[in-house]
Image 1 (cartoon, one colour):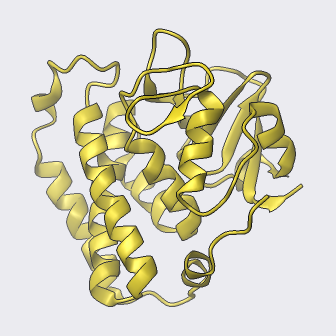
Image 2 (cartoon, rainbow, N blue to C red):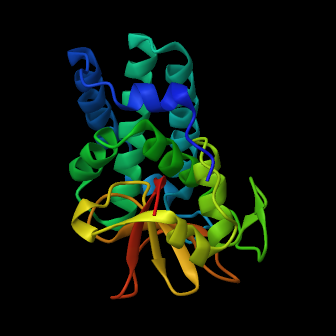
Image 3 (tube, rainbow, N blue to C red):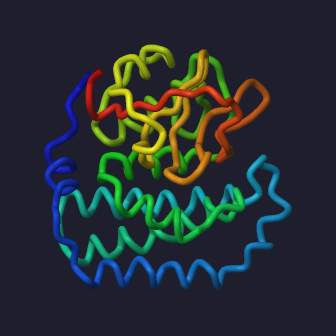
Length: 225
């Protein structure tokens, strides 16, 4: 497994956060609440809020990459803003607690945030077997490979190998971005309840969804098993 990039790892372990960043995150929460959630009702994607999720996720990815490069307060504020908006749309799509999802993403590592946000930029992209191509198609392990590749972590291109290579963790310890697996299928956890993002199956798309199997395994791909 390829190690994470130093710039992300170092910043992910930073213990102190500027008060302005927290304020920006919760300011974004207020803005997201004000956006009309009924505007996406006519879209063709399985997730009605797919356009809102993907647009805000792309902005959040750009902000995270800028912050990883610069480490500046301004870029961290921008990340907090766009990350919170994306979390709100995602939670709203699933009917989950929006503030809980904002907090779950804020408190995980930058590598995990990058994987989650990267996957969400592809919501609505069709499922395609043996494919991992941005904007064109993914199978389940293709999506997780793409998402974690953006965080500097190389995954084996097979669902069973991905969970076997990752450090196993229990459900209570799982964080946004960790792998969720049942035989034949791998997903990314969104950090709250049963929320996940995955490339579902033939005829479907990359979707935010809930865990459908009662027996799943969780793994952290930033550490080897």
